[in-house]
Length: 551
Image (cartoon, rainbow, N blue to C red):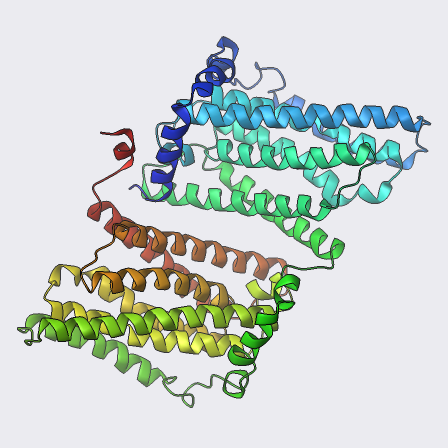
């Protein structure tokens, strides 16, 4: 099953790129050269491909690093050390750029579609241009051992951390495993890593030359973004593996996933300890923020909200059960009856008011939750993972409560469909989505679920777009971006999936997250929505990547 948005985007970019005159030249150099085109990884025969070589290389690196760090460093003149460091940085900067470019050109030349890029078919052999650049990437990670030697020679032993040695040694093993198993995530992980390394070695080169630019923190930020992207890529791989005919190298996925999660934790910890400034500093300094904070956070009703099961309005299990069952029952009954006669102007007016109300409410909820995040949440870790024992009270849970109530108001969508007579729109996915999301919101509130703020914001942003579209359709405008609404919903579900993966990561690497048991229900619900909306998209939109080729 093809998941839209990314495939369409990939085809658009591919068509745009391959039409450029420069592409043909780059393709001749970086793809069609006989050495590249005919490359084949054969364990034990290709240079540096044996298990013995890998084991000796990694053990030698760790051993020499330990021994050299204990010895008095050899006396190298400062100019000589700077020259060696500059050459090393220039070499890896250039090589990283060439690898990223070579892999990108190979992707656009050799990969027919996005599905194949994410998920190589079972039985794929590690040969051809994509795996040639993966092989060069593997060798470059051995060359990067020189980073460690330069740190030792410079005498700045504080930089020789566990993170540094662990990262440099394990990434070689990861690259080897990816090559040996023809791992499906190779091309995109390679490109993202190489782009980050172009930035990183540019920074190191400028430092070597004595310039010391002020964007050191940005290098670590880029590395963290890279790990999150790698995590997303690997999540897509698993999704395609279980919804299609399987992906190449799925067993090696386990090692790669564990390694990326460990790097994410270690780099996040390094970032937290190294940089005291945070992402919300600029926001809270703005004059408008203070006004919004007074309205959307510090209002007594918002600040003092506390969800108490059975006492807060609409919070009891009985209310939830009756509400959902009533919705399903009335939907079934009304869909079987002849619809009441409403004049078209009256029906359009009711629909317009409903869409304006939910559009405005979605915008206010997104804004209120964002302001609450910047006001109430001290750091990213807390945003993703509320501490155990967190009570569902205060501004964040006020907006989660309003969000829960808004999902009941959205039952009106179903009534409007029935009144309009367009019964084709009254699908299983519509009723399932509207009923189950109310249950999910109630569970999140009751358990103080850690993913609440980010899921709320992403959903509300999508609903602003969606109800804007519905509002424009009401007077008969029918904008041409209907498909984009479903695309946005699918992106939202993927982001929700990523957010919930982060909750699990922080739960098992820290002291535990609030509402982890309710995570199981939410995870299953989001996966089901992703599947159902993907299926709906595939059946509803017959256009595909070929329209961009003029077919």
